[in-house]
Image 1 (cartoon, rainbow, N blue to C red):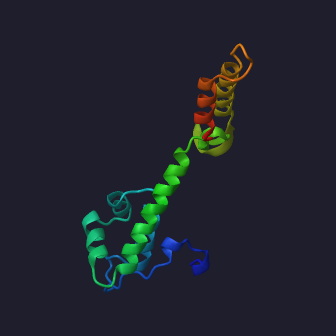
Image 2 (cartoon, rainbow, N blue to C red):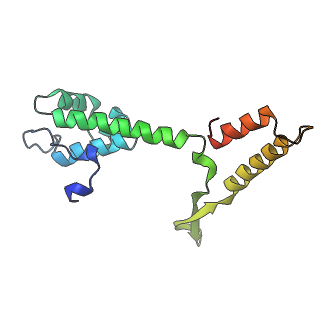
Image 3 (tube, rainbow, N blue to C red):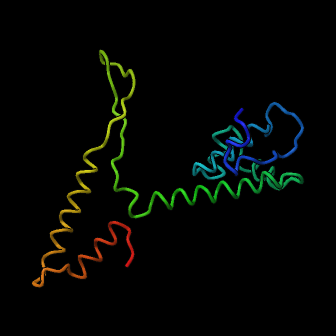
Length: 159
């Protein structure tokens, strides 16, 4: 187990006290459920991934003594929303992404190699080139208002 100080805030909660059952919400299952929520899964998907039902997760959340679990649930979902918003931000896709390339030996898949996706970087550069051409196409030599607005939308910069 990790030291508690290395855990994110939403994983530092007191699990709901339950009777020990072979098919119940053990403390480790509760933590794995919260972690799945933080990764962006919905409650039904997270419970199903652990072999539990959505209804049992909501029943656990409503139990007396499960306030820590309920608060961690809320914090994990807020964390997932923030991460999704950061990924959708205008400047998030401007870097070089990595892709997994399958490797085969004698016709069988033996693994994957991580490579940089240069095609994505080239598409972004082409878009920037088109914007740069549009910025200088005014008689005064100054950027047009439409060109500046398009550049701000692409880079995520405000006025």
